Each structure stands twice: as C-alpha cells, then as structure tokens.
Length: 181
Length: 292
Image (cartoon, rainbow over all chains, first blue to last red):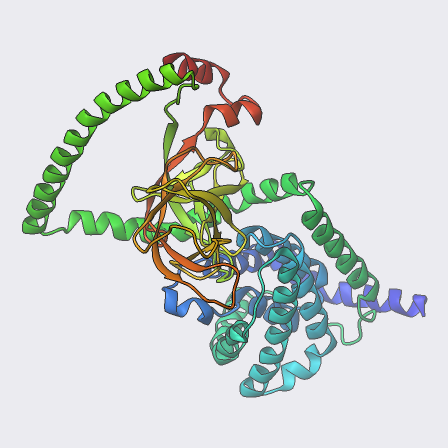
C-alpha cells in the first residue's frame, strides 16, 4: 500500500514538474491575491438593511480552489484562511477555522463529482456547504454569548448559491489566464 | 499529466486541524491567553482593513472637493453660530468649575481631573450582524488599552475590547454583551444599561416599579464600573412601561451617540486606569497629573 502510494506520488510529481517550474510560485501569489480580495469583500461595509445579505465570499473561494486544485489547496490552507477570517471578524478564535476546515473536507470528498455538475447543480451543493458553514459558525459563536433566535443567518447561503455561477466563471477565468495548476 | 488517484483523503490532518482549532476556541473562551496570537495576526491583516476603508476615504475627499458653494456658506454659518453658543457655555463652565473645585474642597472630596482625549478615525465595521463592533485607527503604539472608553460628539459609544499595534476594536454600547452602570441626571438614581444587540436601543434593567424615571430623562455614566469616567451622556429614556405582572419596569433608552455614522471619535485616556494597566507614556502621565 505504502509503496504504491509513493510510486504514484513520484509519477505525479514528475508529470507536474514542468508546469510547476513555470508557474507554481506565481500561481501561489495569485491564489493568495484572490483570498485577500475575498477577505476584503467580507469586510466591506453594507447598508443596515443589507447586512444579512452578504455572500460568504471566503467560503466560496475556498470551495472553488479545492475543487479546482485539490492537490495544492487543502484542509490546511482552509484552516489558515479561517484563522485570518476569525481575527478579521473578531469572532472567537478558531471558529471560522473549524467551519472552513469542515467544508473544505466535504468539498475534498466530492470534488470529482462536483466538477462534473452543471453550474446550477453546483450552486445547490454550495448552498448546502454554506449552510453548514453558517450553522457551525453561529452555533459556536453562541458560546461567546451572541445568540441567534431566528433563521436570518441562513440568508448568506442563499445569496452565495445565487452568486456561485459568477464566482466560478470569474475564478476559472483567473486560473486559466495565469495557467495555475 | 495530472494524478488521478491520490493518496486518499487527509483524514489525520483534518482531525488534527479540528482539534487544534477547538483548543484555540477553548483557550479563547477561557481567558486572555490568545490575545497575543490575535494581535500578531491583526498586524498582518491591518493592510486589508486599510484597503477596505480606501473607497470610503476617497468618497469623503471627493465630496469635500466637489461641495457646493452655497452649501459651504450655509455650513460655515451654522458652525459659526454653534461655536458662539459653545463659547458661551465654556465661559460659564470656567466659573462653574472653579466653584465646583471650591465646594469639593469644602467637602474634602477628591478633585476631579480632566480626561485626556485622543482623536481616532473609524476604519471599519464588524460585518457580523450579531457583533456591534467598530475598528478604529489607533492601537497600542498610540497608547490605547483594553477597556478604554470611546466617545463621539453626542456621548458614549463604547469601549475598546481588542488592541493591535495600529488598530483597535471597540465594542459599542448596543452590543448584546455590553453593560454599563449609569445614573439618571435628574435625581441621581443608579441603573444598568444593557445592550440588546439591536441598533439604537438599550434596555435599562432592574428598575423597581416605584422608581422615579420618566421618558426624556438623560442617563450619564456613573463611573461605578471603574472603566468610564463620571458624567458622560449615554442615552435618553424613550419608553417606560409598567407591567403589573413583573417585578421591574420595562425601560428603553436611545443612545445619545451617533453609533452608526460617526467617523471621528474620541478615545478617553483615563490617567488612573492607564497607570494601572502599565505605563505607556510615563512622562506624559506625570505631566498630566501635575497639570490637573
């Protein structure tokens, strides 16, 4: 078992080598750049009536990059992004890390199927994943004393699902333009 | 060629990461041990917060450049009349202060010191609707400390809950986790103002059925919590309901500060509490104490 894994890893490494030499580090910078934009979008002030309608950009970007590049972007990266989001949001440290790690794992489980889906069908999966993200986030945040007694916190999942086709096409465009793989 | 079969799912690292995050959550809920991690990461994220604020800042600049002449004249007149009124009040204040000091001397009460204030600019608002927090552009470099009161022109806004090197996070008085000891100006009755997590509304709790409190009463900080200096306006009572089935009255108040649209705020550096939390600027403190 171990032997087989090693050989497969070697093969895959050898196969990827030429591409990695050209674009690996540049690609990393661009992935990081998309996350800086996502973190900014998660902070941009919205009018009071819109405050529940903010899409979960960071979670969507995590899902996209795992779906597209599961060999480079995994649960560890999602964890780090989650920690950054925790500090940015001022939530209890580690909550977003847990939520994003769990949805990253979920995406990793089904990324091959997810790639085959048409966009509208992907949007349903995104809806389910973001619902999971929101549930974990607000459930754990309740430990710190902010309780949610209505279902408003699920609105971001709907908005994210509706926005998913555009986010997907945009990020795929970025990935193809810069040949990140 | 891309790998089609990879070495399985990263189950082990998944569990380790979740465990790590859970221990962070527990550490964060139990005490202050994560404060350093938080402020270290905040330093990396400060540029992101500045970037988010750029559009607002640019829009502000543009609107100052493109402002109408008649509007400027109107503004100017308004400010001039405001300034005259304030000057009149200041003249009275001088006299009142001198009188106050004399009376306090007679009572052998300790003298009240002037509070040092520092101007800060709002650079962000917490996107989580459950948390009423704002981000200000002064940090530990500027001598900001946890628990420092924050005011605007109208009254008390909140207090600092988290300090990074160049920014701080201030919890507003309307946050669901905020409570503030207050007193009614008219008769000195003490109460506690609780945030409810809804904008522009505070609950005044544990007011007994026969207490003398009316709509329109002004509440000021009573300094009993030891964090806020005495006498800053917090809120005005907007409704008082007596419910015979309850022990206490249902009293609601509206914050005097403009919590959702003040861009410039004042941070009050209370010299006593600054000394207790470690001396950020010992020389300045000494001078301040000597002056007053």
